[in-house]
Image (tube, rainbow, N blue to C red; front, side, top):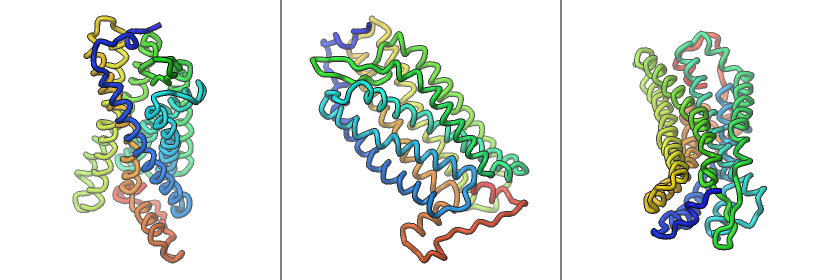
Amino acid sequence: MFRVEMNSTDCFPVDKYIQHHYLPVMYGIICIVGVVGNVLAIIIYLSQIRPWKSCSIILVNLAVADLFYALSLPVLVQFYTSKSWSLGEFMCRFVRFCFYYNLYGSILFLTCFSIFRYVAVVHPLKGAEIRRKRWGILACLVVWAVALLEIGPMLGMITLTKVNNQRQCLDFASNDPEVVWWYGWILTILGFLIPFVVVCWSYSRIAGVLETSLSGNTQTSSRARMTSILILLVFVVCFLPYHIMRVLRVDSLRRNNVPCMQRTGIHAVYILSRPLAGLNTFFNLALYTLAGDTFQQAFRSFVYRRKQTTCKISVIHSPHMSRTDLLRI
């Protein structure tokens, strides 16, 4: 059983101060914005947008994943504010599970969205087929199942422990490093690095097509580029720092010769990176409006409550669609 961190009392516990003051504020902000924004997005998709296409289904599931994550945050806000866990071991594992299920579910949904756009733009003859709802439903079922397989083993690794007579619900990377080390690496490679490579490759191919096909359509080309940049920013700004710091955090607990200040500093930066991963929900809210004109029109109709005849969004079906039209999936 690891005790190296618990016995380290010879350096200033800056990580504990950050955990007590920074995490409740950040998680509180993410919770409010995440609940309001994703509930609004889901309502708009359910009530205003018809017919649904494959990417619409993927984005709705992405919003549902973000909403579930945001709803679990008040428990963590209370925990980090009071410095003591009072809800039992089941809730400890469930709340931690929700964080990682959202994290890797979001990564997979964004990857699927990128692949669908790649097929629609780079292989336009297959665009009409990939737009069908059945492919969106199938992709989402696969994502939920794969995310569950990825995160399921974590339920047996999250533990409660006592520190200074107070129960603590340990984050995944703060549990026994010998138990989580290899699983953490497998999760990083399969759950983050491979999807990241797929996303980068997809948008590099899309960018090449846009350069040659949309030179005369500045607005559509600009929206497509902004969507690509936004998704890449989610991976680089939100997901990449978290995965780097999680590896360093577990490694610092595995090695007994790490100085206290170094271990504490790594833990402090790791704590800073955790809400960054949760900020992907902010980027996802922007993604809904950039993914096409349909959501923007539906949002304006919902906010300004126009007449019902003007609120409905008509979609013209055509077997012959340009790459400009295919971007609006």
